[in-house]
Image (cartoon, rainbow, N blue to C red):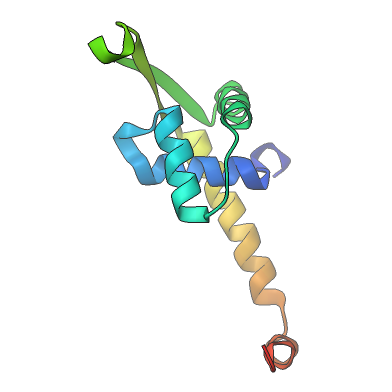
Length: 114
């Protein structure tokens, strides 16, 4: 189903939001992704992806309480919608299907010497 196809970065962002559960705001998502993936994440790219996925209905956002240390600005939190969960499941099933289609003999022989 094309409507549920995710790019790699979108998939990683959704998975990270799932990991963070109720504390998924942009800086927390960025930090978690960098820690887990051991690679830098552009905050601009992250904001673009969050906005795009919210527009697709994969995410919904809400504002937390205002914080004095943030000059009274509330944090914007994200959570995965039912549609976002379907997109993640579709992505996982697609990847699993591809992994399972690799002949074991080809896979094992190509790993020798690594």
